[in-house]
Image 1 (cartoon, rainbow, N blue to C red):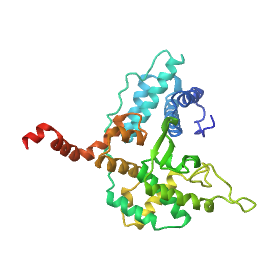
Image 2: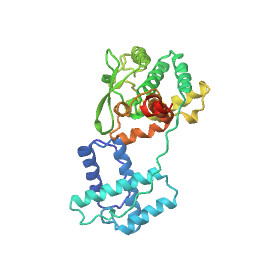
Image 3: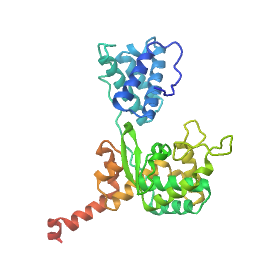
Length: 319
């Protein structure tokens, strides 16, 4: 499949079933590369634990899995990480059962750790405005690149992996609709603000200046909108996050409250607070389930209450 593979612990047998499982997730369910990499790490960690107990990944008993979960809890592992590991284990066990590798599912009785979904950190509109004002003042090629990324992050709500990996073809020649390929390899159209369109045009004009130079002194073209000499061929999530922290410091903001994901939260909360509906927001964010989008409704409870009081006939009658 051409995916980078984590090194397997020495002496572990049956790991070919793990790779077959991951290939199934990719081909049949369209699992994202980051998900596949995380599941591979999780199941290899389980394989190492089982090896110390004299078992293979494919013949774990219910007691082995219970002991593994207990070890994670004792180690103080984050609930979200434990939740993901249990999900990987359950899906892998179901795969082994469906593929006739096993005749039972040892994970069927395992309980998931109670998931306390944290509320998203809110970045104030004024803080976003200060950050954008700082970015717009830097007209160097690197400054134009950061401004384009920041405008798209704040004005289109892209996931950071979507943002940095945008192909050059995603940017339309005209208009303000961006083509984004997100989780599960699903494509969606996301609107750009007028400022984001201007920032993108400025970056496209300066982009050749930051392309790698060939032996003849001419820039070597890249298929990515934000190219880089990094192995992936484009700017990484970590590079954008560092640029964002640096910009926050220079703009007089607390860098610990700003991250690429916080900008995505800001996009969602600011839209909802100004009247956007959940279904439209779900489409723009690329959420498969509207329940994921509903986490943002806590920030607009006052607006919703005011809407009922102003629009509902019984509320008006009481007034």
